Length: 298
Image (cartoon, rainbow, N blue to C red):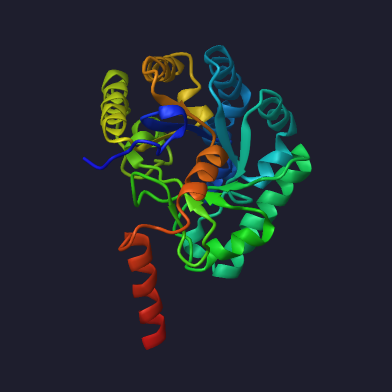
């Protein structure tokens, strides 16, 4: 096993980032624009603002957990009180696009504009710099990482491509903090009957099984000294019953004295200070070279 001593502060064996995506109804509208006049469907997303945010904030305050909240810029304008409550509780705010765009359908310039506008709206709402970014949906184009630095973004948590942070190729400064699908709540619980969203999801997962998945993953991340990133949504796990799953998981994590619970910016700063470059042969660098070769051949 690779020597992991000194990887995380104060002798910690593993790092844990608790993150929350506050999409409200923008994710539903982006994924299915035809829902714009469907109040029942949109209420699924709005529930997070009306009820879920305060449940999560209350739990995080009770357990003294630092968290990072990703928010589309438009939500900072549509729900300014929510932004103020999150910031007042001492949590970090990060950019999640502007309208929760599907980046798959955007050009590089359009992706850049969405990230820049979203970050600007969050700065205006909070008066603080925004350093983090998470792709709302879809893939980002090669070259976006270097553009993010032009408006203050120096880390991302968008890709499932590793178990540890790494530097985005071509930037030398933008840290990626990977997020894994099995450590999200959306895949297990998010559900709308008519129209079906997400498409093909036919049931809501067992709460006990989900908690078991999250706990088992933490056991492995802790064993190997990795960076565990939990991704929550107020409308999904901010319900009266599911908030208990989050409580049980965090309490379990806090029962390990050698775990560093940190914000995205704290993790990015630690990794950047210790890693001026990726390890030789890192998959991100190999993919970047392959992409460059293809573009050159074209």
